[in-house]
Structures are given as C-alpha cells and as structure tokens.
Amino acid sequence: MTLRTSHPTAICSRVLQVVTVLAVPTLALCATRAMGGDVTAVSVEAASRVAKLYGAGGIRGLESYQTGILVSPSGHILTVLSTAIDSEVIDCVLDDGRRYTASLVGADLRRELAVLKIDGTNLPFFNLSADAPRQVVGTRVLALSNLFGVAVGDERVSIQQGVIAALVPLRARRGSHEAAYRGNVYILDCTTNNPGSPGGCLINWQGNCIGMLGKELRSAENATWLSYAIPTSELALGLEAILSGSNNESLSGEKEASDFDIRSLGLELVPDLLNLTPPFVEAIMPNTQAAEADLQADDLIVAVGNRTVTSQRGLRQELSYLIPGDLIQLNIIRNGRIVLVDLGVVPSLTEPRGKR
Image (cartoon, rainbow, N blue to C red; front, side):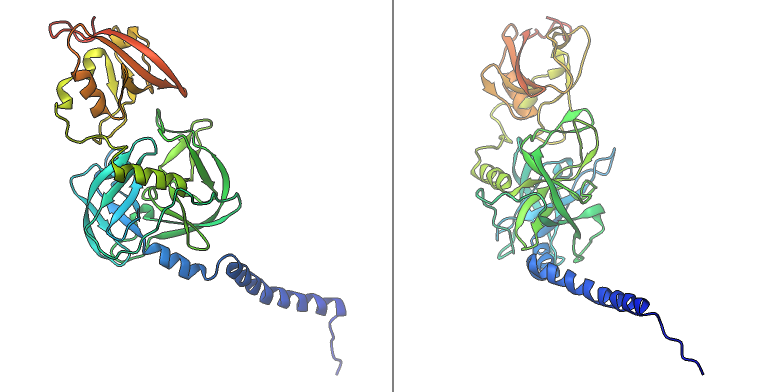
C-alpha cells in the first residue's frame, strides 16, 4: 500500500491557517482588554445611566420617543430639545424597567439641550464636567440609545460601536431650518442619525461619557445625513446654565406673550411646538412690512431693539410692549452674520395686516 503524503509547502500553509484562526480571537480579546477592559461590562454599566423617553409626536415625521442621560442621583435627565418632549406627560423608562413621569426643568436654546426631572433617589448617573478632555480622532466609542424605540420595559438600550472620525463645527439643517448649535461636534462612523437616537450617550471604552448623540440633521454643505455627538464639555456648560436658570426663558410672563400677532407684520415663524422654540422665520407674505424690509425665510430673530429674545414666546412678549406707531427694529442672524432690519412702525388695529 502506498502512503500519500502532502507536500511540505501545503502542510506549512495548513498549519499557518490553523494558527491564524486560533490567534485572531486571542488578539482581538487582547486588543479589547488593552482599550479599557471588558467592553460588555462597561456598556452594561453605562446603560444603567441612560433613560428611554416617550412624549409627543408620531405625526408628520415627528418622532415621539428619544433618549436621555441621567446626570444626577436625584433624577435630572439631560436630553436634546425636540418635539418629543413638548408634552404634558413625558414617560421615562430606566434600564431596570422602572417607570416615571418626567417634567421639563428648562432648556438651553443655543445648544438645543433640555433638562427633565423624575422623582428618583440614589440613581446611577454620569458626572459631567466642563473640563472633560477632548477626545482624539480615532477614539473607539460606544453609542447607547433608544434606537427605533425597540427597547421596551427592562430591555437594554441599543449599543453601537464605532470610532470618532472627525471633530468639526456643526453646520447642519433640518429641512429649510438651520440648526441653532454651531459648536464643535464629534463626527461618528456609526449610523446614529435614526429615530430614537437623539439624546443618547456616547462613551469611550473606559465607560466615560464623552458626548450626547445629536438630532437627525443633514450637512448644510452637501445635504448628507450626519451622525454626530456634542462633546461632554459643552453638555456640562448647558446643564449648568439650565439648572442655574441663567439660560432659561420664563414660562410664565407678567404679560401674556400671545397678545401680539406676528402675522400682522407679514411673517410666518416655524411651528411653535415648544414654549422655547427659537423664532426662525419660515415664510414671508408678499406686499407686507416684512417683505419690504427684506426679511427672509431661515432668518433667526435674536433681538427686538436692544432686547434679546431666544424664543417665539419671548419675541411675542417683547413686541407686545410696543404700541401702534412705535418703530420696530429686529436683529437677525443670516448666514452666520447679524443683520439689523427696520420693519417700520407697529401697525394700528384698523390697518390691513402687513401694511404700514
């Protein structure tokens, strides 16, 4: 009987294949440990500090759910400012399935952040710091969020893995409206621009919160969808401003803000879905004061005379202090520049709408 033997080269090749198959998982495990230990344990710990939020929406493409980050043991939750929290009842579900009703504490319009509060005690939370180190491009990250709202009850939020691809100023839009926040953001190589992701937590492999997942926005330059996160340092500044009350619009003024009809000037603002919705111009009526003054869609009104406004409510309130015949001067932001617009005088109640 003749024994068949393999060629020495073939034997070496097969041995190399076996060694490679055995070595790859070992190398991957070593790399995972080198990057910060057991990633599974890190993500589980982080998930306990992330909340699933359910509120208003569900129509015309407006999602009714998103994500939040627990930032205090007593139940403060930081999230994005959106239509989902424009609701008298905001449901909050924690990682262990506990359910709470959350209330709105306040908002930071420039960063488009909001703080909610639930009646909790001794809750796990992330301690955000304005001095948090900036992460470098190439940092491995995990994104935790209520992606597509698939996690219900005590099911854990979705976890995506990726890297920081860039650190750039945000220039983004949703439809025809430019995002108010224009600070630096982390651009991610994982797809986080999906329903439910906004307000989610971005952590590094050591389990530190390094950012918050942003809204579903497109690049203002090329209209591509953006997957991005606001750095922790910005989150901490926004959180401090909201809790201190230095950046909040009053929800109950001495004079009713709805007294002044902005349409009488010939301009339409974006839908006022929140008491804190910024006064972006959506459309201009022809042959009106606004049209003659060259106000344009997408203009952001930031002041009436020398009085700063940060919301539609604030704009209406400042205009309500004027009487027929008073001069109306608006400061607006257009293409990143502040422009002074003279609208003429407040029309009398007997004049046709939009006429001087």
